[in-house]
Image 1 (cartoon, rainbow, N blue to C red):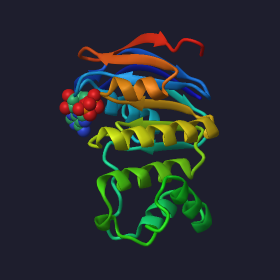
Image 2 (tube, rainbow, N blue to C red; image 1 turned 120 degrees about the vertical axis):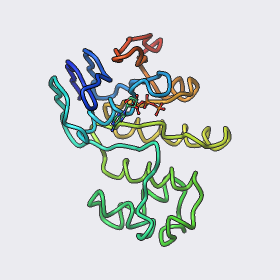
Image 3 (cartoon, protein in one colour; image 1 turned 135 degrees about the vertical axis):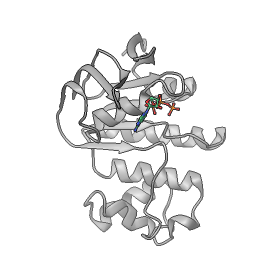
Image 4 (cartoon, protein in one colour; image 1 turned 90 degrees about the vertical axis):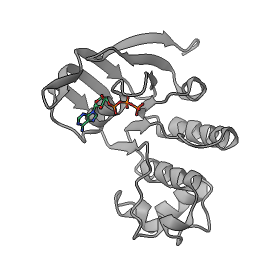
Length: 203
Ligand SMILES: Nc1ncnc2c1ncn2[C@@H]1O[C@H](COP(=O)(O)OP(=O)(O)OP(=O)(O)O)[C@@H](O)[C@H]1O
């Protein structure tokens, strides 16, 4: 569960995010759209607990995980260690999750030996192996071709359904949000506000 009541978030005195309220319950997937530079990453970092410098209040229940726009793997650690070390998952759990995201056999590779798409799968494994209660995803499929995105969307939808987390996913691609989100909101303006949009029919 996420509950944010934000008054302001600024960088060096310049307001980037303005007053906004955001509630996401378990099992909900909020799809965030917005122009480049609108403030999506800034908002996700607040929700992830990676940036505490804001005015307002944030309540988050349970374990949080984030999938970054750039998978940010440790290049000096093998794929398996990139899953176990930041999460304290056991090697068995990490191997099972790497298998799940289609990376069986690559556990002992170095990040420099895998493709961008495979690195993104490691990022997904690292997040989902924690069995998060709250999951923040920042452009998780950026710079992948359509065929690869389609496979990853299906995989991600399955993993989200299993964790039943409160999820916020930011993307420029309407198709990605449509495939995953149960609610939609747009980050717009300067300082940015949150414009709540439609709720998926039937949810
Ligand atoms: N650490 C920082 N210091 C100063 N300004 C920052 C910092 N991080 C972000 N900003 C500014 O805050 C604004 C919002 O940036 P943010 O990265 O959140 O946008 P975004 O919607 O995620 O963009 P994109 O879709 O291109 O990733 C931008 O104007 C950016 O320059």
